Image (cartoon, rainbow, N blue to C red; front, side, top):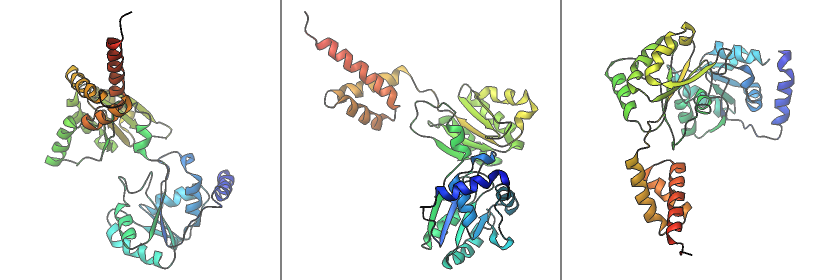
Length: 310
């Protein structure tokens, strides 16, 4: 056992001692994307008690578990990846039918988002067996949390763009008209080409995260047209795995404010301020904070004009 994690494994067992880990269940386990310390106590306990471990790359997962002092027999491992997920899903289901606990993990992060796992989960639930998420790190939410996005009501996750051809060109062009922040993933050997393709977005901000949670983690936000030059200034900036967030376009225009004011004035005459803002957001899709500030100003203006002269 890895001595440095012996106490952690013991703590994990104690932390979940009153929780249920049913048999005939598939546990979808999120694992660190670079920093071993990001594993959760529940994930450690789940990995230690499961009868089988289905994983994207058995070599990667074996090394991960050994880092935590968890040893599994060779016949406990099942390689399930994008090329055989359909074929091996019945094998997983047959083991669940025999009462097995099975953990599914990808090389890093949360399975089934951009990595394999979605089809396996679909097959298992369709067969009537329970699937339990063991949440943890995701590169997507990791970068989102520090991107400083404001004034939006959601985001669009694209993942990896098509490698080349007309499909890729269509995807790139669609980014220009996308009104929500958009999240992309990219590999090191394609990051410079992607940066060149995104430069046409001009002043649109892009937050780029490189080697997230690892020793050489780098996060920066800059206009799209500056991204190619930023990469070229240091050869290290093209190394590692990348997550990019294309911020939403700046839609704060006078015409929009006038339109929102007209709607809010009508609503405020019939509803409370809170109710007016809520309905206006549903009607326009505008940021809640912007509508709230505008509604406050309109309410104050109405109040001032209706006060009797002294």
